[in-house]
Image (cartoon, rainbow, N blue to C red):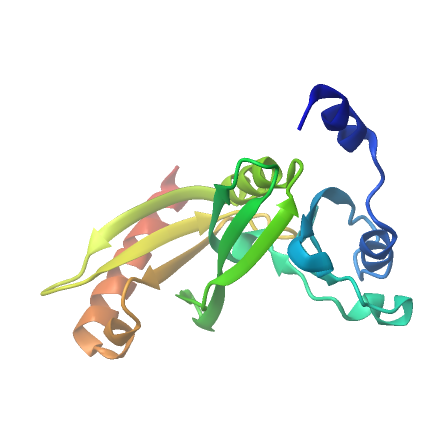
Length: 193
């Protein structure tokens, strides 16, 4: 992308369907931060103040309110691989709460973009801004967990969760107890600060 294209992109308005999805949002303060064009005219991947939205190109305006959002604090990771022509591929791993204080990784979502614009930098910054603390800790015998404190919109306190590297460890009572103990210690240490 040459300098002129970069300047045009910087001051361009988001596509009409992306704007319609954000206008239809339950959050009146949601705004578009960046967007990328998906390959083969499939639509757009948009970063908003709330999270990531995949907006299909064939979306009717009456369905704009149905486009889901992956909140920033529910993104475990977002890996960007550039192709050198302005496009590339995102591999986004969402999280889901399986019980209070315990999250599991969902299957990776892959998004191929023909034009990424500022999307990779914005996604990186937004995900990083939610993570206050993160530390990997071993479980007895085998396996590891990640203890993560995140900023969650609308909550004054940070939210601590544990994510098991291997979902099978979640069903092991010894591993679960150890993970819960490590999580309780992290929360207690955080409250002292």
